[in-house]
Amino acid sequence: MSTKRNGRDLWWDALKDFLDAGRYWTLGVVLLFVGLIAYLIVVYGLPAVRNAVISEAVGSLGVTAWHEAGFDGRGERVGLIAVGFENYRRLVYRELPGYWSIDRHHFGSASDEPLDPLALRRGTALGEVLFDILPRSGAEFYSCGGGLDSVVESLGRAASGYPTVTLLSCDLGFGLPRSEIDRLEGWIGRMRRHRYLIVVPICGPGATVSCCVPSAWTVGAVVGPEHTPMDPPHLGTPDFVAPGTAPTVTFGRRVTDGVYPLAGADVAAAYVAAVAALVWQAYPKMTIDELEAYLAEHAIDLGEPGFDNVYGHGLVRLPAPPSGD
Image (cartoon, rainbow, N blue to C red; front, side):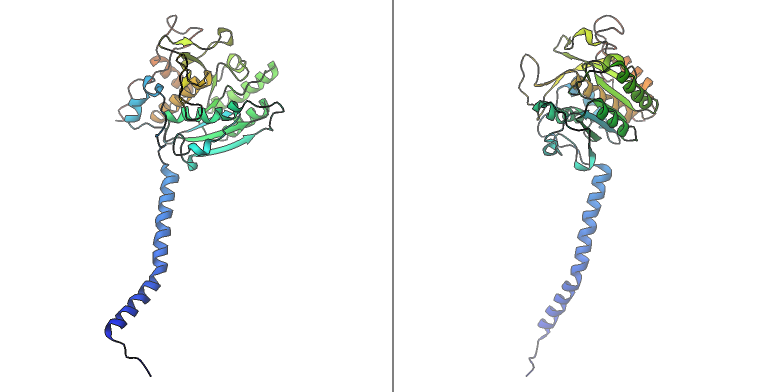
């Protein structure tokens, strides 16, 4: 015996049929929306979420005004060569940019000598320093475990067309004979001719590169209100100096005698490398020589008037940002 159905039941059945058929449309719309969000993240990136530590040097270097004018490193890529980047993933979207903005590479075998645990995290801490100034930049992180060969291999990867500014860390400490210095100079010289800037701390690698590789920018560290040099004078003459200590999540923020746990000439070099990338964002047609002249013109002259053996061109300081007209 058939059951007579009223009009309300028929309408309800029709609505259920429509909803069942529309599931595919709904799924398609959701997937399209997710794909659009992913595309926007890849193309434009996400700002680093600043919920922990920002170095006060961001203000003292004149960077804050550039950020307010819209210069934040977008479109630039910086390279960082260090022994290790331990725990960097936990800082993504906090102190470092998003996963889509960071490429990680490893070169060379692990050293036979036990590594200082701090060295394994120093690359991560230096990354924090870089992205205080370049929150929307991309990054290439190069872990080097095998001495000069791995550094040269990293430089070769950088020369393939990715970062425009590459920083070498102090923890890459190794002695370099004259032949190896010439080899490294050859690589850095070729990169400079193709507008790839290499920035090295005056302390390394091996306290020899900074003295003997003229194609790279060499940076010394200063500390305190008197801008006292942190590096022994025998290590050579820097091109620029910058603050040599910074608060970080990785190493902490406790100050001892005016110095944070992360300190050294590679901290200063990270500031200079990031400032250089920021200027290149504003003036993308500048050559490396023009960029050096620009920063030298606006640097704070310290020590003897003009260029000197202790402070080089002086303390890096950005002028007012361009108006964008």
